[in-house]
Image 1: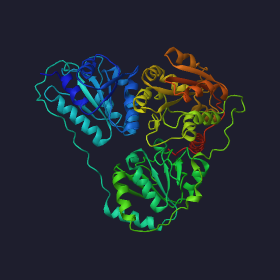
Image 2: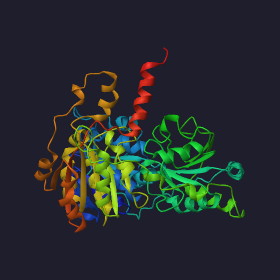
Image 3: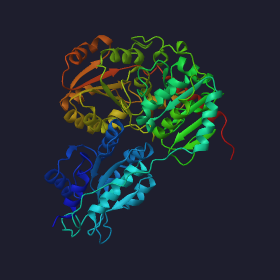
Length: 548
């Protein structure tokens, strides 16, 4: 008879091919079973956060489940920031972890199910009688609810034999949420009346890209996306790029003129909504699987699948030969209308705008971008061109975390295929996740790492330093990331001027393999436009505090 670990491993491997993990007492036997009895590919990470962040990044890039695995106790608690991020991003995965024995908690155990629940993540505990069925339940729930699921393996069970009959596991399909007919009819009626419609797509609409493009063409709508969904409408004439804090000035102008915005699969967070200052005259219709609107500006909410709704709308509008809409001649390269990109800032250090524009010009067109969180995200999100949906992975932004860039990179590397992986991080976040720079170097076929190194936590200096707070806790002694990178086997260059990119650019052109770290010494004096919005919001809160 198979052991519990063998049964769990075989059922998982029937549906999932990628495993990201760090070995410990609680998961040693099940990892061994995955390696010895299945074809699953195991990628070792150096910190438990990297297991979850990599599985998260893999889902965002491919739409396929991955497994993250760690031990119990301290191994599990090390995952919590990445776990909360994945839950907020609605990234399904299996988090296979050791857990307390069936006989009761030991001094070093914690209530893992309670900690997971606090992050919005459910737990399924493996039992000796039905380990395969328990595993199928966890897989089905992850896909159906679009959530990480903890698959907890009690410490005393992995090597015990199970009498559960062998079976071919099947996953219960999720129910496709179809749009309400009356709500759909009202939306079609509104489309007949509006003159400046905009279709906004988020990552929840990735599979709806072709249908939304056709729908937008029929009704003469400008398309925009949330930052993580950039590339969904690549090549479309009436595409204006990204909606929110990363919008170009021209795109922001189009948004301000809209009279109807239909958001498909978009969470509508404060950054996408520009802190409430975008499209002030427009009705906002949200199409999403969420049970209720996710922003107070929503005027109508249709709880439905984005693809199903897009196809239903296409059917409704196909009978009409012409619709009012936007003249295509009005939209002129709105995505990259960014103004000057100088080489140096006034303090003599690199201007991040000129730096990222120069890097963009040398990168191959086939690219997958994975970013950390922090002030610097304004630069890759406004200057790097993306070829298709799933080409931008913003791991950490949902939970407003830094330090998940390197931890997510191994998962992004497994998803990249023939594309160049581009990993962008700040110096603060890079130091926080430094252990998994090694994981990236071991895993990536071709990767470029951009470290925006300004010797500071710049989100804090721009927000709180500008309010007069002591900046000493916000500063970082300048770190030589190039030397750190050489220590784990990467190529590396300290970039103080754009000509320092030449050796890396030659490597790019020659399709060189390996990982090249660009330690870019940028100025912290150049503030990203989205950060100016945050600063304005913060000043409003400080100057006009809420009444008790």
